[in-house]
Length: 81
Length: 338
Picture 1 (cartoon, each protein chain N blue to C red):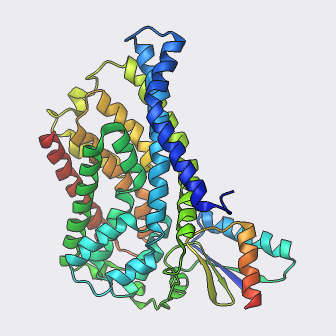
Picture 2 (picture 1 turned 120 degrees about the vertical axis):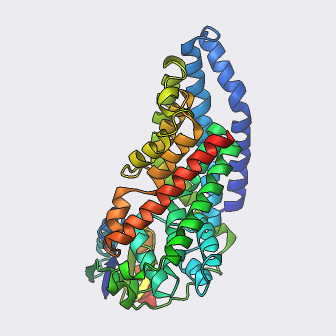
Picture 3 (picture 1 turned 135 degrees about the horizontal axis):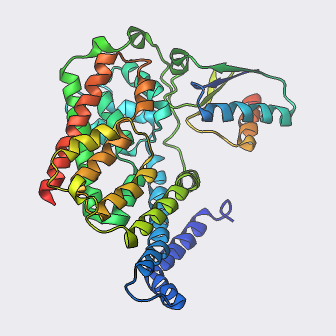
């Protein structure tokens, strides 16, 4: 699984990245987490609000920072799909 | 409890809100009487200001942020973009300014939003109308203006702010400044996601409102309390008309100067209102003070630096210049009307 954290390096994006790591750790799932800071790439996902979270090229979060619990749910839903 | 009975919980909270709000004035009077402060003394006025004014504004803020949170759940940048797509100048500017008020926006998302708008063919001037209205007219500013100065001031602020956004965007549109946008902006290709937002349940919208309250009120309450404390400190002690000679109506030059000082400053609405209140209290004119406030929250150095990544200097300067002139005109209008 490849998870991309989209954002220009603002505080929210860093929080999202941290929480993503936490969620993965708590779920004991191995995934690659990448940061995407290039605006062209961010917008190419159709996102107009940062931070964004893209799991395996699918937009999962845009414009808010979910809690670790919520992130776990999002990741698990994605795995189930 | 909220998870299980969202509507019931909200109904109870709303009721509680009404009870608190209506009993606030007698309660504050009672506290002042209980402490046994002398009637009409400076200290009495200052204390009353703090025990009445601060809770009142915080209560108003909570309610309005909650309502705005629910309203905003009906709008998203993606949806706004869809509405604005294919709209011509002027109609587009009017719509973009209005949508700027209700669409959730944070200046940290200014660039992705700009790119997203431009990519889907929304004209530059219309995009600017949105970007001007969104930060300048926000719910925190409106609540504070309403709570501290009454609905007329809040309404005037909102309507003149909207007019500035509409007209400035329109002018930027007819000036044909597209050449001052970084060329790569026009090469951005984006997927157009179909967001499943119409299926949101009303209870989910209510929790969006609750989330907004938690996020915004937890961030700004401290500014408000400090601000009102400073305000009440000044209320009783600094002589009235202290500011009248430098920021009063007769000092016509104070408006452009207030705007020039306000542009590089950056503050959220909550942080600036106490300053506004203190200035007004001491004889500064409403036009001058509101112009200052609009310049501080509507135009800011950090936002300009962010925009520099996608816009060339002549466009940025034009944008700031037009909006600044608009704010100055509004300042004079306020001074004439009041």
